[in-house]
Amino acid sequence: MVNKTALIGSIASLGIVFSIVSSEAVAQKSHQTHSSATVQTNQFQRIDQPLGNKIAVTLGGLGLIGLQLWWFLLSKPKSQKAVATGGSVQEVSVIVDGGYDPSRIVVQVGKPVRLKFERKDPSSCLEKVVIPDFHIAADLPLNQVTTVEFTPKQAGTYLFTCGMNMFRGEIQAEASDIQSTVIKEEKTMKEPQPKSFSSIDEHETTVEQRIQKTTINVDKGYAPNHVVVKVGQRVKLNFLRENPSNCLAKVLIPDFGIAADLPLNQLTSIEFTPEKPGEYAFTCGMKMFRGAISVQAADASEEKVSTQIHFS
Image 1 (cartoon, rainbow, N blue to C red):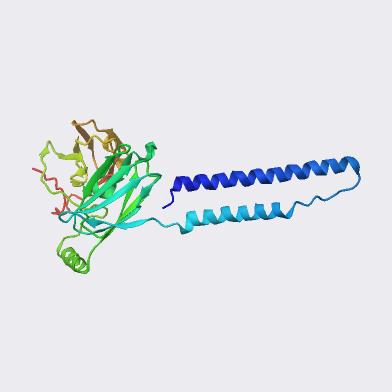
Image 2 (image 1 turned 90 degrees about the vertical axis):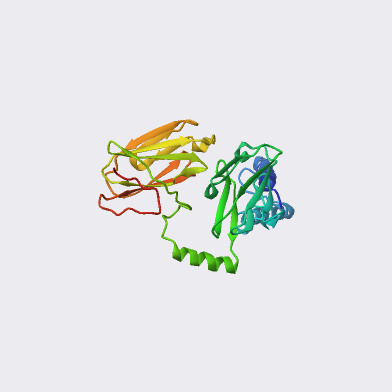
């Protein structure tokens, strides 16, 4: 697979070469026209360029256009299917050099996946890999192999990106026919879950002085990632950050105007009073990890699929 950085450099070099050729041709024509004007001041004389120059410039322009069309429209990501190693672990090695190779990885649902990232590019943009759907944010030391593991529970496409979200790849999780049938049956037996959240943590919280309280652990995302509260009552969320990743160093709750720093291994309390029922998102500072606060009317029935806050 051609290195994308090298290809971009080649395109730029070709552009510079043909620009120089064109400039020299224009300069030559201008010089010849000036010389002719000194001899015949009252007569215009057309200077034709050699046919070879015209053909070279035309072919060069067409070549550049072709390369750009291939780059933006026809170039497809390199795909690789994960290979099962010892046991049932699916494993793929990914070279990090001007992007990801392969940039598309096909795995099977329900089996552990092990991705081995080997970073060869010194660019700071590629020094971290992020897989938001599996709450992974891993540093990639230069010229070292870094292993990340996860297990896709559902079929679908999951993106992985560099720390600056400029280079991207995708993980295509596929289910066999038998697995697809089982998944459909399980979905019909389960209660519906909120959109955009792959799992809901359940536990009871306490209430003190009419304040609804819960503690949220910040490690590989938020646990719980879905909190249900009552409208019109004071809410106190205690965030305990245990992950040193800078991505989780801040929590944002835009609808309540909250942007709070989360010091490592310290409890940070945030208080607010929801005035209207609805769904309100909270995210990390880079908006890669997410949670939700469901505000229910006072007479709403309690739900059993998410974190509940009870009144004494």
